[in-house]
Image (cartoon, rainbow, N blue to C red; front, side, top):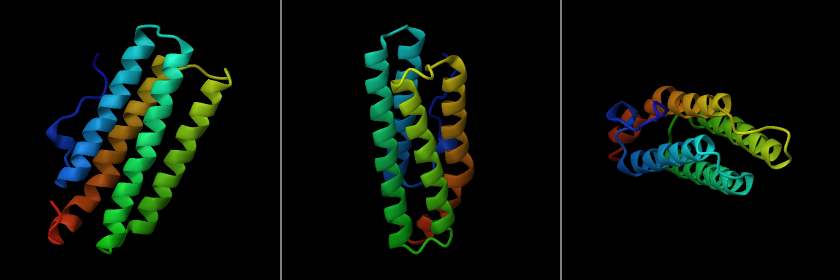
Length: 135
C-alpha cells in the first residue's frame, strides 16, 4: 500500500502529539487495509468509528496544549478541528446508513486530509509550543 505512512516530515516536535499522529496514521492504514481486503461492513464500521473517536480525542489534546500555553491561532485551529470532526462524523453516518461506501476515493480523501492537516496546520504550533518548553 502506498497510502499514508508516518515519517519525520510529519513531526511537530512535540512528543505527545507526534505519538498521537503516529497512532492516527496507523488507524487510517488499518481502515485502508480492511477496505482493500473486503472485510464486512460491521468490521469497517467499527474501525471507522474508532478512528473518528480517536481523532476527536487527539484534537482535544492538541487544543488543551494550545490553550494552556496561549497559542495565538487557537481559535482558527479549533474551528478547523470542528469542521474536520463534523465531516468525519458525516462520512461515518453516511457509511452506517448505507448511503456511501469506504472506497479508494474515500481513503485517498482521508489520507490527504490527515497529511495536509498535520503538514500545514499542525506544523505551525510546534515551534510555538517548543518556545514554551513543550517538546
